[in-house]
Image 1 (cartoon, rainbow, N blue to C red):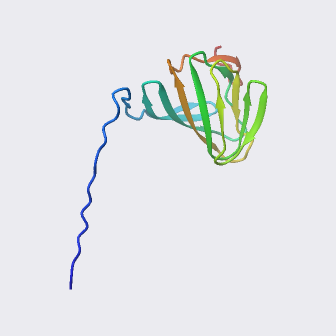
Image 2: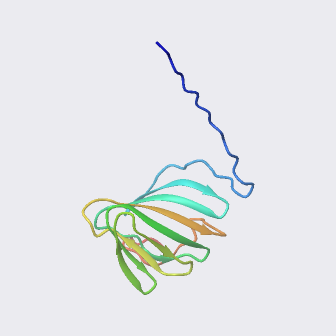
Image 3: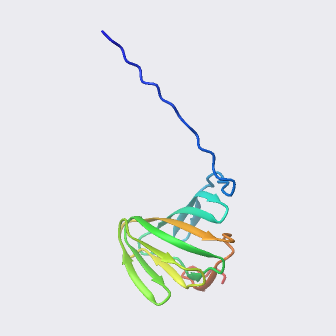
Length: 138
């Protein structure tokens, strides 16, 4: 009987000097659902966003960042500037900075999407709200 043992080798590739990812932060609850910060580095942030059925985020814009949204599950109703669209699994859209936008879940299951933010400033205080179902400040 011959016994074969496989060797596993792991090679770690260092991140470029301009990228310094930080640890995952706990999930933050919102009236419409929740978001989880998956990764953040210089000039980018990646979040997992979950929107409850029948809920929507505020109509908002950001001065310092753009966003890419990729639907993982559920249905997204998106307003981006003058455009309105419905997105399903594996569909995506781009939200340029300084563009009013809104995300809504018109479905009966939770909407889950990945949001990739890019910009010079990615703080949660870079949100200008035009309309909000939950009466949060503008």
